[in-house]
Image: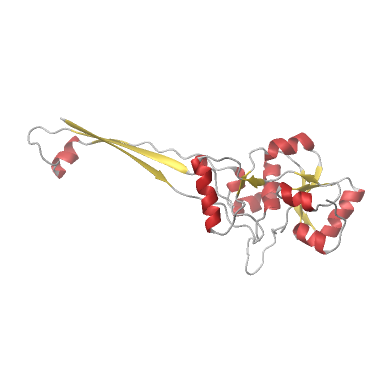
Length: 237
């Protein structure tokens, strides 16, 4: 009697879409990437000490497989699905001048989801910063590998999804708050000839996550803060 046990790990590297040229390249966390398949083979031979024949394999082989796949986070969901929910929940895009008016006259809050360093350089007065993606913090072997992958593409400030995003938002804004979500580029839900489903961005991803978590008055800054600054609207450091 002989027993052969083989363990074969299988992993696939998945990444979020590249949102826009100004948006970061996002890799999913390791727990969302690795799936393992365990194959146990037990064969029984009756006589000759030789290689298993195909007949013996078909008779005596017992195979047990187990594969697990962890669910992806809401931020990693396909853009098509995000866009459908945003439209269904009537999340409206507003241009920068309307956003300023809503902030000044109707107590709207601008939620700036850019990285903290960008927020500190310049932001609309009164804006609140909660980054949807943050710089990679840990130095495990996996995180070092991710940094190397970013560096391969010439990106030396690799980012990852901020696991504390919703906790931070909820500590600053209640579910009835009127929120305009802003990032650098803005993105759009509007279809165009080249982009029939629009183009996602950090602010649209954040808006999607907010809606999933029960926020009812969520708006999106069309054109992003790039347009805000370009049009000379108020800003502070």
